[in-house]
Image 1 (cartoon, rainbow, N blue to C red):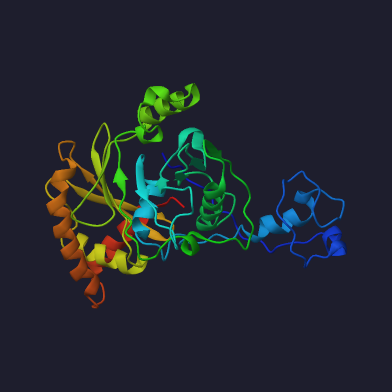
Image 2: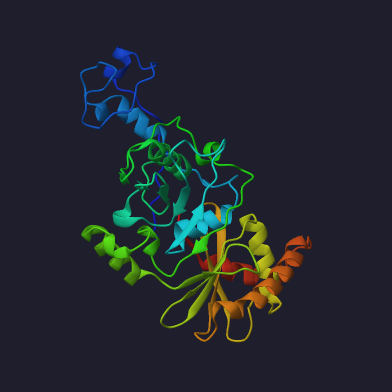
Length: 330
């Protein structure tokens, strides 16, 4: 479900002459791009303070989920998992009238967030964002959803450069436990027949495109998925990239990087500052069949990561092969 997102090269914020004349140092509110700039310059916001505000938030944050519980699962849900939800715990508890806040991979019509009739909030994770900091974009959407009128979606908007981040809003000591679903029926509580025609059509399209996915229980942030030709295991790992490449190369050179007969470590993704090794699996190998081999591989990898000896020529060749088979998602 998730799409590859282009990275935006950071640029130095610029301020127009009109903005300087009106006082560039004042705290100018964010308004619509075509509205008059609140600074009083007489220019449209996008041509005045909006230009500096847009540039100020384009710098890419390499690890937007760093410091959050379950960083690896945040990355997986953002980039790899079609349908999943996670209850979120806010610092200081829930506001009055908001019985729950739930993170969802995708919402109907790609809504950024939804405030249900009962006041509960669903926050969409896989939407395109307006800045280079996904955490800030999501935090802005969440704040607006908490105060939105129940019974409707929350629309996207450009976030202020000094806005809060998810790390400021979420309880750092709470658990992050994704529930992976076979479809998107969680969009409609109760009877899906009560959904609007638009939501029903979006639900049908999303269910048709969803790849069967299961989160393993024996290791963290590893997701089995089924495709027509072969199955895969995609495992988001928290280790620094260079260290992880060395560890995987040691295992690969020793013939110990597979998950059993017919499986193969084929490469990795880079996503939000973390590496995601990928294994090809036989079509007959289900998620339950991966549990024990994954746990055993985790033990072998831990030992390889702790090894400080220089790589052997064979291990260096294996590392080069793994490096050449990397793909950057974000």
